[in-house]
Image 1: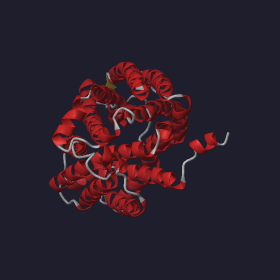
Image 2 (image 1 turned 120 degrees about the vertical axis):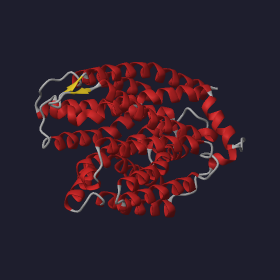
Image 3 (image 1 turned 180 degrees about the vertical axis):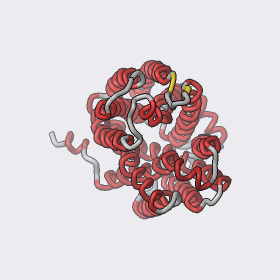
Length: 410
């Protein structure tokens, strides 16, 4: 009778690990997200064109994707704590360079360095989560770690914009460096070595290891699903603010309220979705989230002029749907590889997510046409592409879930 509550309780050390990984993700995501809102201040300050600024934003994603692939062969050869500290140190150094950049070329190089190191960290976080927490608890852990996205939207971006308005555009990057140094110290001092996977390693050649990771059939299933999962957010998000202002009639001053309330909704929903994933089943929650997302994307991308409360309501429900897809799907994905392949699988998976996101936003840019008055034509076509991808992903996740169950029985 007493074993059930005990099974569901996290130890003090596990709570520390969850908190520090969520905090670490917050710094990585904030660093990635802060650049777009800084565009209005940064472009005149460095005298850069919109296409140059677009390159500064996208160079992070593409260098992160490339480094994720290159790091994959080595990801399972080291203690995960040491690997995390190495890449996090590089990320902090890259962010510091962004904070002291004085020219376009300097900033472009700094973003590339930040992407090379920062892009691998998410995969190490997921590998650590999988190593330290059983499958039955992973939904809750992913739910908490995923709230880092919402918190960076609610706290990070407004604080970053406030600092850049009152000081200069360098200030938000220096703020991230200060917070990251504290997080890095806590990881170095308190996190225990994570090296259980090293005992199971057979193949010592990193290139053989990478080739094996890329060619295992169940891994390929996972990679294909990840590529399509990245489509939704990356296709809708880049044009979200322009669509709200020019198509829906929301003023620029009202936009922060939309982001703020949507972020709070996502922050509350994340841990609840994670708990439900563990309780009723990850696939069931993923299916429910997919159905909700499809309905809300269909409504959102076909809206005419709308009121602020209505847009906020639709945005919150849509993002709850997206959270209800991402959290259980990531928890399911952690069960695809065996422990000795976990780091390399997560690294390749993260790389695919970055590159797919970059490709999805490029495709969205080709679909949408902006009129001279700012109105976005064919935004609803993006909605239909996102819905099509969501339906295919439901079928793919069903197959992945079956593979994991067969693997567990075997």
